[in-house]
Image (cartoon, rainbow over all chains, first blue to last red; front, side, top):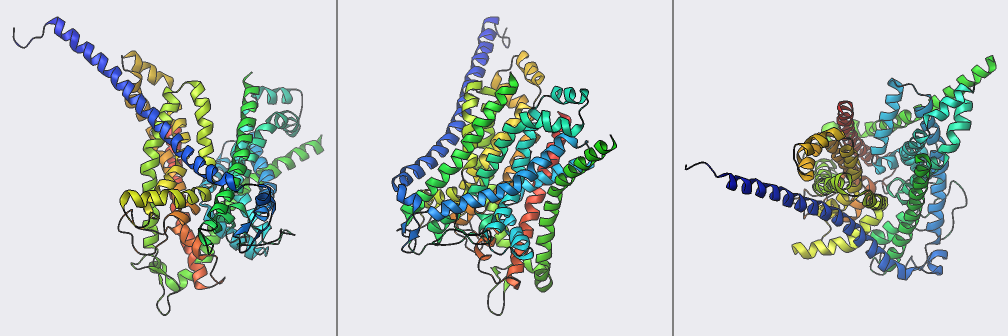
Length: 301
Length: 293
């Protein structure tokens, strides 16, 4: 009877295989969990490093004073104000355009060549490197339109950069509005625009706001597009018109970290700037995430 | 009634025009880059940008315009970033999509978004002050500001893109596939490995390519962390300069309209075209995948 296994033996073999595959599953899931943990760990290390070394620098003077003594002392007030201004300009430019584009794509467009082209263009725009936007800004806004190196040129360049984010989020918000709203409006004899304006846009509004905030967060943190379109190395006063240069938080961090003549002396200031920038971007992102969460729940009910 | 119709038409046209602006912007970027590169192309010739040599546009007497080392540096950082972002990102995505409870998902997904929100200049700063000394100590080299530093940072940057897109791809796999596999006695892990991930593969590949596109275009992080040396790098422990960093370093100092100025636009054009083709390819793969699913 050599070569054939007894039934008892076969049972234990299959049982072992059974046990093995669950052991393998446990191990694999553990590895996946470790991967996620690693990603979280990286994030935590970055945040902890910036926060622990940046927090000590933060005080009212740091936030409200001009830098002085060759930027080795004083605060970052003009950089905060500059970032605020440039972000607002970017939003004024990107938000109307983004929302109207989203309305076209979701409400008016018929599936076809033009819609596909617009979507492809938007997807590609979101992949265009930020430094290329900077080059485009130099050629179009600074030179061709004659804005010069200015708040306006930098803001519009940032606006272009955030356009795809705004469109995508605004479209998502429009998609979340139930189809029955539209059908109801049309059945009552409303024209398309009346229907869109009074039935689709109001419930989609909070979702669109989410997109706007996400776009703002992106714009506030970008450096490359403003390098040659408007950001100044050092300006001890606030920009007084759309055509003046400005200081910005991300560029100021770059300057303090790599361009300053005494990098080690300004390291604490660099950490402080990084911390303020991170807090600003996180507050914007957090606001957007919370808004979206509430918005989604409303339509799930 | 007629007036009503006219108004509706006008409104429709208005929205159409707004929609078309995106196309014009993309074409405008391409046109601007090309138009501003032409003076440089005339003088140097297209081969001048791709012959062996260095990027030395201001060298007295014999300026050189070779972008080969810059392209090599760009791809070193890009592929290095992928080596980090793709395995880690797909593992995170698989966990979030297939294993995690909905509560876990609700916690971790926003956190991943926070990672995506870190400004690139802050990551670059982190690379400069934390990662560089760490790399220098691990490999026992004088400076940790090199290609590896940039690759790790950009990998971290690309991670959220890969996670969220790969998760979308995995979630989009029809539930029947999983049920069939589980009904045949496979464990959940065997189902993930042999059924779900292969079925989502093209989506995952497209996600990786989009991550690559982002990595290649990244400027500030790379500018601050890779050392920006023009010489040909011998390994990941050498400093490199990428296409994007090259523009960022030199654009601020060139006289407008000079040959150097226009040659930087040519570098921008090369960068634009590389990312454009990578994104298009990712797009095509995505489209195929969507149609099949």
